[in-house]
Amino acid sequence: MSKMTDMKTPRNRLEFERNFNLLKEQGYQGKMHFMQGTSHVIDSLNKVKMLPNGRIDLLTINESARLQANMMNNFPNMIDASSSEEETE
Image 1 (spheres, helix red, strand yellow):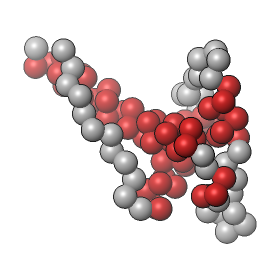
Image 2 (tube, helix red, strand yellow; image 1 turned 180 degrees about the vertical axis):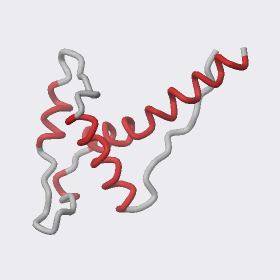
Image 3 (cartoon, one colour; image 1 turned 180 degrees about the horizontal axis):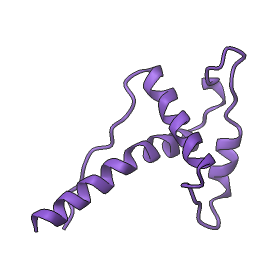
């Protein structure tokens, strides 16, 4: 049985933008797939805009996009945690 772990949330803007950049990179690499019926998530991600200075415009991020970026950043940690549990059993 797997243990519940806390989600690592960003502590500052730098970590927050890093999550979005990692999400963007995973999308380019084809490592991100969406279930049918979740078009609202894709729409939310498409609405995220960049500022002229290359930073992310925080005003264009809604809750759905934020949750997706934070979840994808934590996903490798969840895989590592589940594989280490399997090794100890």
